[in-house]
Image (tube, rainbow, N blue to C red; front, side):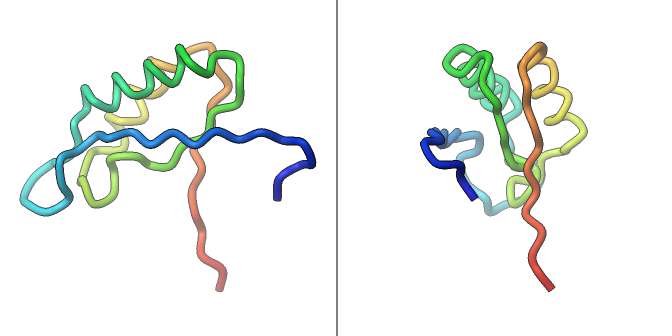
Length: 86
């Protein structure tokens, strides 16, 4: 639940061309580039993100999380995971 007066910005990063097919479809360099831009645009703000590229794109979360940690070094950032109720 948002705090009154809180401002949120949602960023959509294109990190794969499609989600069908064999092998890893995540583009690790696109992920690096997208998070680099997030750092430039939103430095010193709280940054939250899902396991981008590790779902239908079949990217290796270990690789992706290291990219994110490297690019967002010095920033407050948090992995946000959806946990269904029940």
